[in-house]
Each structure stands twice: as C-alpha cells, then as structure tokens.
Image (tube, rainbow, N blue to C red; front, side, top):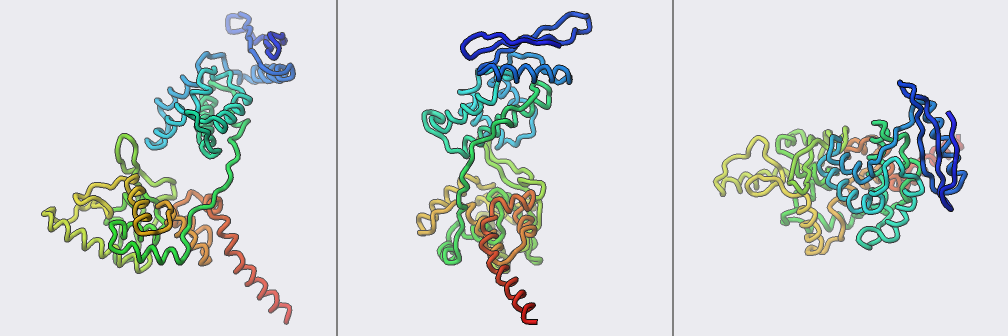
Length: 380
C-alpha cells in the first residue's frame, strides 16, 4: 500500500492512499483531509496505512457527531433513566452546539481541546461552565465514542487522547460534633426529624432512604437491609436497584435510631387508623405521604433546605448527613473496608477518593501509638 500528501491550503493537506484490492480485484483509493502542519498529515498517513495493514481501518462515513449521539442515546444502552436524562441534556446543550456538525470520523483531539476551552470561557447560553460540568460533558462524549470504537465505526476514541479539564477538589460538607448535637435538638418534632436522624445514623443515600420498606428493617435485631433506591426523572418516580453492585447491604443501627423507628411506626399506624386506612401494607414505605405513596427526592432536598433556614441550622445539603456519618466513623478509627461496605461504595478506592483527607487527619492517633511502642521498645 502506498500514499502521498498534497497541500490543499495554508494549513490543509490531502492524504491519498491505496488499499488492497477488494474481492473483485478492483483498486480502492481513499482520501483524507488533515488540518494543521505537514507533520500532522504525515502522522495521519502513517496511522491509516498501519490500520489498513492490521485490518482495523474504518470505512469512511458521513454520520455527524450530532446524528450519532442522538442515535446512541435513543437506542439500546445500559443507562438508567436518570442518567439518560442527564446525558441528553449535556449532549443537546454542551456537545452538539459546538461539535455536532463535525463528521464522527473526522473529530480530532485538537477539536476536543478547543471545545473544552469554549465551554470554560463561554459555556452554554453564554454562561461559562465549571471544569466539573465540562468534565461531565466530556464523559458523555467519551462514552459515546467508545461505543463507536467497539462497534468498529471508529478506530480510536479521541476523547481518550484529550482528557477532561482538571477539577479542583472541593471540601465535602460535614457537620462537626457541636452542629450534630444542635441539629438533633432542633429537628425534634419537625416533619424531617426521623428521616434526617436515620440518614445520620446509617449513612444511607437520599434515594435509598425513600425506598426503604418496613420489611427491610429488623426492629428486634437492630439492623436494616438496603435493597433498592428511589429515582426521580421527568417521567416520574421509579424504584431501582442500588447505585452499585455493593449497594445491597446490611447496616447495623445505633440504639437511638431503633427508638426513633419504633416511634415513627407507631405514629404511622395511629395516623392510618385515624384516616380509616387500616393496617400497614406488606410493602409499606418507612418514609411516605399520608396515603403511603413515595416522596419526591427533589422535594426532600427542597424541604431540607427550608428546614435548615427556619431552624437556623448550617446551610448544607441533605447529602451532608451521609458525609457526616462517614466522618464520624473515620474519626472513631473505623477501617476503610468496613466503612466502604457500610456506605455501599463499589470499592474502598471510592471511599478513599472521597474521604481520604479525613483518614489523613485521624492518622495522628496512629502515629502517637507507634511512637509509644517505639519508646517502650527502646527502654527495654
């Protein structure tokens, strides 16, 4: 196979190369346009000839990034409804307006790099985006291109060549011991008393709490089982498996949490009797409306923000109760594997990525223990 390069413009080059004859003996000539320096064209010629020789060269296609993205999102994929909803939003607002008209097979790393810069500077609708949001959009593009590679539409994933912009790690929201005590006092009698106290006692996610059934709780044994989560999309509410494969787990609860749960169960039974609804259904939810319907996760977050304002509590997200739970375990000397399992993380690596700085703080105690041991040894 042979090829040559011809200048087309100031920074444009045409690559011409020959492929092996097809089954009828007909010669096959291909053309590729490369923008940049001659060295870029030479590298591309080397790449396509090597791919052709290895049998991995993808035949040209006029499918654009916009067409491919929409087809991928509308087709068969392993995305949950909530994730699919978010991916569509990112595709339509951040990817397609800037890269959508480019032919899928002509997307180059330089274009991805420039796209990042545009989003960071101008963003969507004239509002610049954070590096974290740009990273989310990049991951959508990467996942779509990876599927194109797997189905041999593309020979490589250019979103792997150019990574997402670096995100500055932000401090997670955690309540200190004084704030925890203040919250527990202030929340008594509030509609969010029981769900917020269980969130703090268990470290469960918002959706896991709202999907919890009374049959998932062993009031005598002092533990509960996380079996599912509640997800909210524009289409409505639905129950789904936990976030990760380790999401199904058993959590032992402190005695105070069991007291609260018993009190809540009594209140629910009394309320149902007053309303003439009878006993609790077998699949009755722990946290629900008066008629037993699931609560909206988004409404829970909204109500929590209002409660923090009215009760003069720290203005933190509801998810901060989960972070606080983890921080208390770490401060108490809990090991990362046990904490990871309790939180339902996919692996201890995730736990360390989120809470690694807290393990660093608690390491002072370990250092003191080693120092004491070393002094004892020396005295001998």
